[in-house]
Length: 476
Image (cartoon, rainbow, N blue to C red; front, side):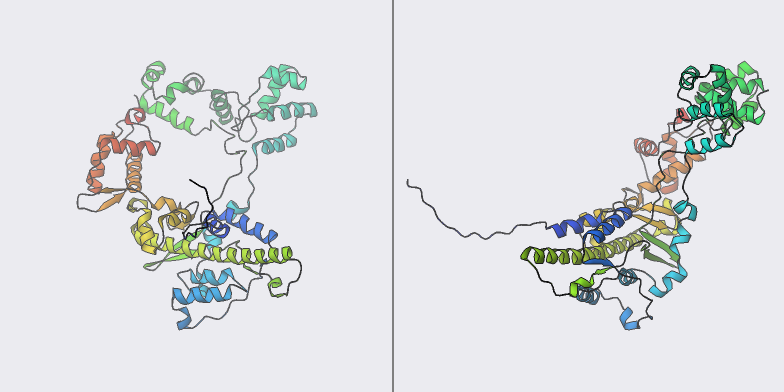
């Protein structure tokens, strides 16, 4: 059979993810912090993208202009995109109140986030102790030993080197090191630079003047493990005291801090900045997108200038123009999608916004996707790493999606509501007779009218990091 070459036409369809589409998908799942970094990076790299100065607030539009019309808004946006895309404009569209009243009625920056939480710098344990060391009356030689002690502390404030090792490091005698160590242990926080938990607590007891109580000293130096395991009966027999006296000692010990340096963590705390705010206004809920810190983007004035140059230069300029326009449009669509999703969540989880987490109902991504007419994957991306400030606290958007349990009357209750009730019941239990998983199931059935198996209760309890009833029980 002879071989031959032939030309043949074939028509087919293929789904291709362009770089612009990939960017739009990536912007959906970015957190607020990552979004700000991405926008700032694009502003530096793209000469056709710039940040516009804030515009003076325009007078209130007429009633006809305020009437919601998605088709008119999208058409108007596409017409203005080639020149300007002021974020303040579309944030006005995606808010439950008129733009002119937002700044007056809801000052989200000061109300929801404390000033200290946003701007105060947390001191480190090392710096805090060195500051006290320099202000102390120790000699220069003793301060050198103190520097070595502070330099060998763990993140929670315990000394990680022995006295002999510190003496070798500073070329001092062990007695000199012990003398400085006693002074450092009196620094704030008291008990820092201790070598174990017993020594740390004893330093705090001596500082309070309770070291003359032999029972208290013995409990701290010899029986911390027994107290942790709640083995109380042997302690009552040994010290010949009753449970009321032992309870007083326990309350005193619990006021002490076994990890004095833990509050001075080395890692910087991370503060969550909500993407959306939900307020109660009368009988309705107001939804506002958080635009604090987001730059006002527009195409640069270079877009209007006639360009000339080589083909590569013209191609580069055209590509950057498209990238700038696409970024502005993608950001607009991101905010629009976020608003729609939160609006739908508020409709579906209204009992939660009214009364709290115990009223959180079951919800899945498919319900929100069908409600707003989008794909489940889009809803999943837009709810990733996004936070909403509600009247009951700040929650991740994923928190509102949970499985449900069928109630006897045919309705359903969310798993998070069940967890909240389990946590509430256990917090109110008698330490002498903690609630078993079976008893918790009976209480849930009485309260929610829902039958929950013991294994399900145990699963929810373990998810809350709560020990079993046998480990929670106080041994008297």
